[in-house]
Image (cartoon, rainbow, N blue to C red; front, side):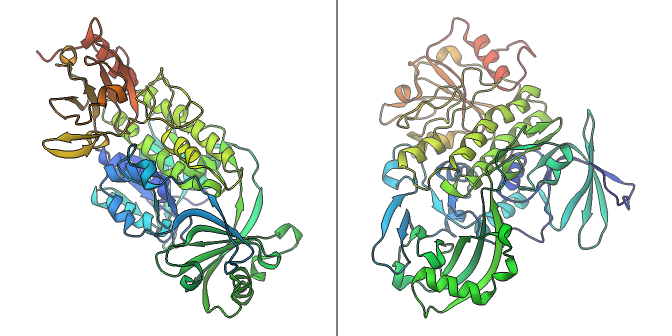
Amino acid sequence: MSANRKSTTSRVEQIDVLVVGAGPAGLATAISLARHGSSPLVVERHPGTSIFPRATLVSTRTMECLRTWGLDEDVRAGGMDVQPMMSVSATLADPRHTLVSMGVPSAGELRSISPTTPCLCPQDHLEPVLAEHLLGLGGELVFETEVVSFDQDATGVTVSLRDRSTGAVRVVRAAYVVGADGARSTIRAGLGVRMEGPDNLANLVSALFRADLRDTVGERPCGLYRIETPEAAGVLLPTSAGNRWVYGREWHPELGEQLTDYTIERCTELIRAATGLPELDLSVVAVQAFEFAAQVAERSREGRIFLVGDAAHRMTPVGGMGMNTAFLDGHNLGWKLAWVLRGWAGEALLDSYEAERRPVGVRNTLRSMGDTGRSNADGLTDDLGVRYCSEVIPDGGGQDSGEFRQSARPGDRAPHLQVCVEGCAVSTQDLFGEHLTLLLGAAGDPWEGAIADCPLVVLRCGTDFQDPTGTFHNLYGIDQDGAVLVRPDGHVAWRSRTAATDPLTTLYSAITTSLGVPNLRQPRSAA
């Protein structure tokens, strides 16, 4: 990629990772990097984080990740108390409503399988929470800054950045670049990476508005209302704990319609028709248009440059998977980049990003083209049932069909179980962090004394944590002398049901394989 404008400075700054885009994918990547000891620079072409609510469903798995970062309560502070259901009716005021599941599991369904629950929270609340946390970790976040050129070689990527308000150009030399710059990604275009799949499934126009609809929908509205009256067919959805809503409908620019046709007056008329309240007092805040697409980039990595979020996969809002898929892309990639930069991991770990996350992007993109109704079982499987398979998890594989069940098979998200540590009840997920975690059975003596060339925490059942329910060994699929290795992102890297003949050598091989550095060094004992 090249730029017409020449740099106004000859100074080149050396940085670890440049993240282009400050949406959920970019911020999650940067936070994961910073929490693992790297110093990311995030640039965003807009003046700030999103001013639109956009995605509102924060899934169970995303909330689990936010919880490990200590951000779950901050996110819930901007959440909405809504029913996770879609209502179908002629108008909002019509007394005849059909309720359809949106695939969001209830707190009761999640109680035994997760330490948290989903949250209905608008993106314009989520993003500032993430941005503030990143800054608190020492990350750099710069708005109104765009990429004008980049050039990569075997050792790094040189990028010219322009301040959109002043025109000043800043040149950085990054070890890696992450393109988190959305559906019209400058980074993806500069790499020449094609998108595969339909790019224009539908055109929609949406109006953000304020109105007091509590007398119509009650104190606990549905998460989505599908309106079928012919003159204003579309959707209505609450986007804050107060009186802010979005009305959306299909429009047809191919037939000559223009966005300017959707004036404040026309949007007001459409909203009143959709609600069935001709005298509704409302205020239209903003109107915007967007396309429905279902596309996936042909590849998610080109040398030292990676694509995450909408830059890697565009999906429709159906199922509420887009933002969560984007966030979990960054959660997967960030720690891997940091560990490679710190010398703890090798190239195969970076290759695993595409191997593990692109299939998820493909699956979720295809499912976003389906019907809006999803069962709670589907929602659990899609969200918590992701199982990775890559060179660093050679024993992984796709999720089994049928009902979701927790499992500690390699590639799975490590199961939640309430255990006790120093008299306090915690989730097993609280045992994982900025390190590899080796969970040992109660008779795990053969594995004791393991040392790795990276942060490794060894925790033994009955010694380092107590198992009040007596279900740890069965849930994690090991005997009393077995072991499970969990990655920093909470996915199982390796498991041995029983003690190996040569446990320390076996374990060392498992650790080096999981980090993409097999046979790099000889195993060592604690002595």
